[in-house]
Length: 374
Image: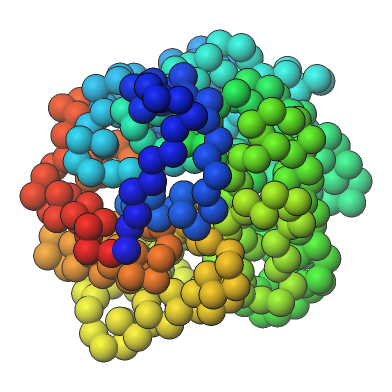
């Protein structure tokens, strides 16, 4: 059951806008996540990247992948529909000094403005390092790894300083889904050094927790989200993936769900699979339930909360009925198992940013109403 938690440090704390609320409540990470309910990503926006943009302006990055300039009304529309948390993917090196790894103050300020709008709308926010033009792949190179850690540490130290006063409606996430290195270990052929590849991600996640906790203030107690190996459920449940040591015991694990890939990712046939237009067989439901049961057994039953940081499916090649069936089924399976599902959404997807409304409002209201069911 989704719980509603209100713990205030003063009589009028509830009237303080989210971005001004510095309260860190005495609640578990599981309680926090259940309070979030269903979430949505502000996708293809601040994680947009590409050398062709060439650090020209904050706005050019924000709009490079099809998004209009974000407004407060757009963000408020998420809350009005019933979403409880917004995941905010960011490519921090878009506007960054290559030598010192200092992030542009203008870039930070713009991300902070949108983040504040979300908090002021009474949304939780998950802030991360996203794909970020792929520099994380260099962790696989023995000669580049030290410099990668230097960059990673520089980014998180800056973010800890910038956002350290925020209360527990802000969660930090260690990485996106780039924490896996095919050149070290191929998960499909099982060739290579699996232990080394996992150990790098485990070290990154431990570094993340250590940096945040050492920064003090509210970060000493902040709830943190730990990226699993490639955010893949099967790989997250491998014994080689280790959750970092956290003296506060306030870490959740992040996985993504795009299963089956031929249904969720492909809108047309590819060399690795034939695009599926149907979903909903007994085998499909068994696969969904098996995957989420694995997360419950390996994590939730052991006191480690789970956020499904992304889930979604391509819609251009399938009927709306089938797409909605999959979205509903995944959301319900997550909530019933006490996982927090966060919909991946981009410009042209479920939400019309220009109109600040969902294209299928009745479906979305029914989807978010599942919060009340669980």
